[in-house]
Length: 74
Image (cartoon, rainbow, N blue to C red):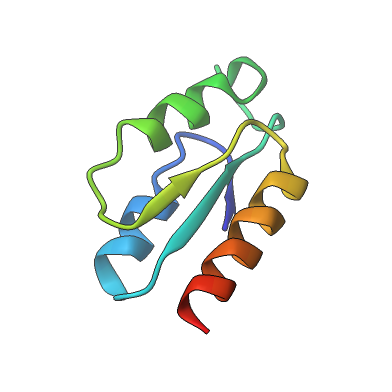
């Protein structure tokens, strides 16, 4: 899932499902997003289990992580 602002979405979703979640912080946002740094730090400090965090705007890294998880589970 791609999230901006404070990056709380991956932690919420990870608490609701029993599958791995991939978090991608976005560089756009409002307020003090600092180019995605606020979302990235929020995601890294998440306590949801099964959350993989990639770097800011790294859709390729997220796709690679998803493919790797798919190969391991499938």
